[in-house]
Length: 204
Image (cartoon, rainbow, N blue to C red; front, side, top):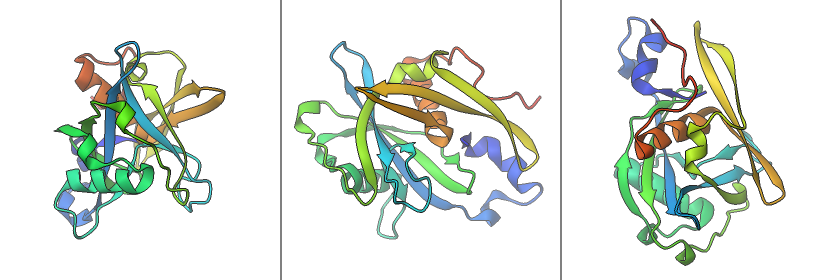
């Protein structure tokens, strides 16, 4: 489930102001680098199968904000260092997108960064949180290939949940839900065009 916070507010709160929900803050780092063919690629993780929530799912490095975090940028960078060993000095933050609201009412802010020197990054998975670190082409999230979707009802409103199948080496991954929704939005911003499929059901 992935829904921009502004689009979710009316459906989730009714006549109550959004602030009354007081959703917890979180941030994810969308770390992009240039692939061998000049394409943008994004770093992803497969969450540990031992975690109590979303175990074994594909996600972006990130997590809930700590009290000491100055902002969403700091949260995303701190979590990426903890999860995959990415030194914050290796990346440059270029944009912070509108927050998404997860199905658990977690306010998740995508922080886009560029990794200029991929060779300088030595992935080091925190095995208590991450089983695998891999990367995928960003543009795939605009294409109607290896993609499927399902319509779900969430709090009385119908939404599309997208699933992207991806093979890295001899391993198969499914990128879906919140992570897929964020990457569709990031790819649309980076490539300056909409996806070649219906991103979300019209509410009109």
